[in-house]
View 1 (cartoon, rainbow, N blue to C red):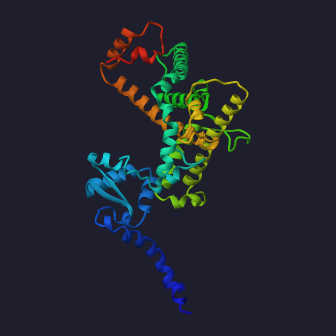
View 2: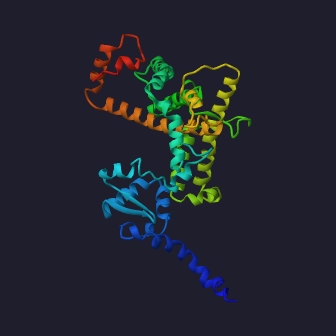
View 3: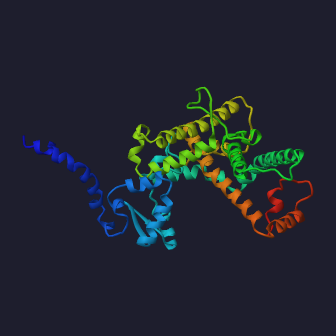
Length: 365
């Protein structure tokens, strides 16, 4: 009977209050750090901003209001000071919060592992993949995809000219997305996705190596996966239940996470099948990952290999396409840049060469 007060309606009403007050009280060391009132007690403030696609704007506005240090979650302080970068990201004080748990799909990879020893093991295993020698061996695959891009743009130009137009109109970002995905696909999975040749966003998906293939828009899938993972990273405990939420953002986003993992599974499966038949001898990124060994001489298992290959796809696709599109935009919009660029290239690249080698342009001003 002495426990009965704990189960009274009044006690139950106090549970939510305790749930939000305890994190605030527990983190006494940052209690005086200013920030939005709701953010001091709950992760929901930051999750709400991320769901609206306004996290960066909300955090920036908070810094303008409160200063260099802002408490944006009960246990999370945002720092707007460049001098703090080497301290926060020091190799000797390395800490990954539970935010990274939301990004795990196949298994933990180099990006989202939170265990320091495991991160060190993975880093040592894959570091040789990005040596100068390895990267130089990737150039033929990059060049082949750039040749396909030039071919497709020439086709669009010829079509427009044949129709009596002065020039072709297109969204270059789409084509840079296709290029980046095909290059990363070629390097990380053994073959391009074929987006450039098809001129559209499409990729094969398999939930397991033996399941039948389906198809999904990979670029759209990658974007959705990033949006939902970034949002759930604000409240990782919500991830197992997110698909049941009424907001389709979470349901569709988690489906994108599965589809992106399925793309990696399908590609790695094809590569292993080709290797078993002796049909492939490629010095690409996936080959380097397949050769990788940790300090004990153990190779990466297929699941871990797939997770690391997927990490390369995520890390190297949208960053490459966005940067390429921005470079083209500012080159064409800034007076005099294109003329100077043509002049410099014409001095070192022979006539008729559409995709110059790295060696031929590496010393340009």
